[in-house]
Length: 379
Image 1 (cartoon, helix red, strand yellow):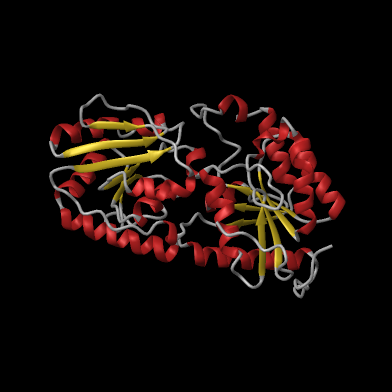
Image 2 (tube, rainbow, N blue to C red; image 1 turned 90 degrees about the vertical axis):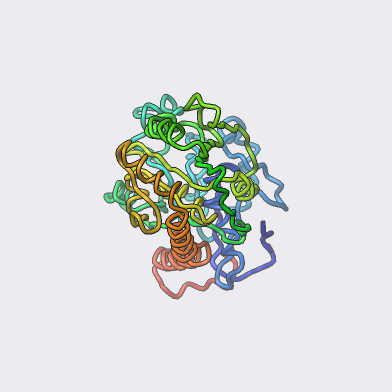
């Protein structure tokens, strides 16, 4: 990752306060800051690199706020504006309010999930669900912010009545981290794969019957789940791999998993409709064709039968997986078009530039002028 030059005294100074080194913190905060560091008109930095030597995991803020307050305060003083993920606690919320009152700098809250409609199947439902203290603090942070940065249009629509601006910055991928030799398909063993975090049992059950039928139908097919999934099917050609890797190593790890076809089952719920298309993006940048649930994050991205497949019923899952298994040319055609879509429409360079321009315009409006001098330190 890039090291930010603290001697640089030009550009809009943006502090990204992220929770941890978890994947979503990387995708939504760190990679944007690293990309914008190369811009002449931007000066981004975040909360886990020298000279402050601060631990990355801000989830511990509520336990030991003294450890984080001084280093974060030092970073805030250098910033023109602050973008913060929700840390789900009143101490962090009080810290943000104190910083805003003390320095008068705008604070934008970053959201990648719907905090209003957390499903009871979610492992964190009791702590994060309706009427919980954490949801109360999260909503207070959201509505006290000067603007929101969200990952999908559906999330934006949830906060359409937010008193301040809501900007959509979609998830994207850094091509430099995903450059691997394209896997050559071996017809003797075709691997259908899924990779994801905990809490997806209800989603994965959508494809349980279809996977059982596919394994029965094709002796050359193997199914592999990676990450926080579950041993969904009791079959000798079903493999469950539990392994955690640092997010910066994840692209290589996924590329080496040996998938030929990716799947992304997702239950149709209000919470899931706010999710992004990230799983499709990851499969596609590895030149994998995929079958995804016909739910908002995917149905607004995929042209069914052109750069991926959408499925709603067990029959559709079986039929569309069967096409990709049996028709090598069709699988190749879809994977190539998916790759082009992701690398042109969801690439880090173009979306980071859009993000930077939004932040500059927002800051200019916040200060009451489009001609804010960004060439000197803030203060």
